[in-house]
Image (cartoon, rainbow, N blue to C red; front, side, top):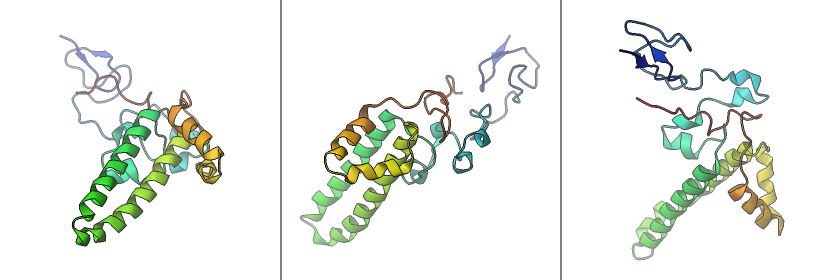
Length: 174
């Protein structure tokens, strides 16, 4: 009976130790970079800043506090809403309990830093430099840039900042 490669999905005959299509070991545990091994990150102009597959962000730091790689529209919107929700809850709790104000101030700083990092990664998905973020501080342009960041489709395929975050998600996970 044939099995299927967990990396590329190609059929693997019984008794094979490696996939004939991609060369991955059969039955081995997948590492973080296995799914994006076909992408040569050094080929990107900013490849030295890209450190992995965006589909494999495991920590809060990788999800919210990294400026490397790309972030698609959906993740940008939901992560921004999540950080805003957490901040609002902390502020609401700090009103009746003034001692929680000591938590709100560091949380506000964390939300600001995280918002900047998310926006930089969203700019990268649109093949713009992170400095494009500064247009959010220009009156009138801030509304246009905000709408552009929320609704513009990211660059299809790889760009200067890494592979397409939608293409790098494996179809099958075991």
